[in-house]
Image (cartoon, rainbow, N blue to C red; front, side, top):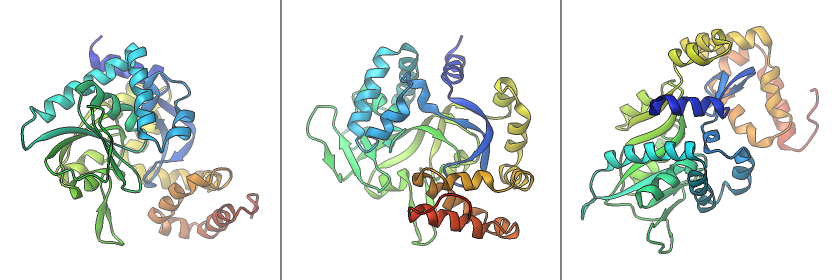
Length: 309
């Protein structure tokens, strides 16, 4: 079994790829999906979600845990080894004006980027959702907060890429750009390459290429992957042909209940629904669902009744 096949087997066996009875909204809010990818499950910790919930604001805790897992789980070690080899190739030899480093974004990226940096004995750049940055030094010296990254050549290591919105997004209201790549570039770093364990093959690579970032995925969830590994491939294959069209068709056939579910229990999921409402405001308005969903969302935000409205 070659390295690609072993990674796919690990991804499948760990539950990293799941077909869904009920679709969910993707992080960018641009569509709902009939399958879900959880790349972090390959790390070997069945409780990784609860660990991230407890430590997701502490990159060093996540990195230390992931490094420990990479030493105790041979399959995850193989993933990190392969990613480290690729990162080393892309970074090249260090020089007086080129300091190599590995970056990762909060918080699932850190499960991969931290061990890769550790394996290469390179600095790790932790990027937070609020654009805060911490530079971790491999020599053990004190972390540098809010660092100047001039002279650093960086490879970003990610868990998953779909549309790439967390990596690079044009922020229309402010006229600026947001995401991991702009944060690095604004601090002086050279960043032209990204390694990811999984690509959902839904436009992220093409968008990043236009912004000068090459993407190197190890697993691509495309038509060939779905046809070969999905138990019920038809919904996912139709989705891959036209994600937005499939999203509208599903909602027409099944109604707004799956959107209202985002208003029931976890207020942290509301930003994803907000993005969805923005992308589909005309469609949802035509279906006369917008007012109903907004009313339910406001009730959750105010801590009020989450039941029928």
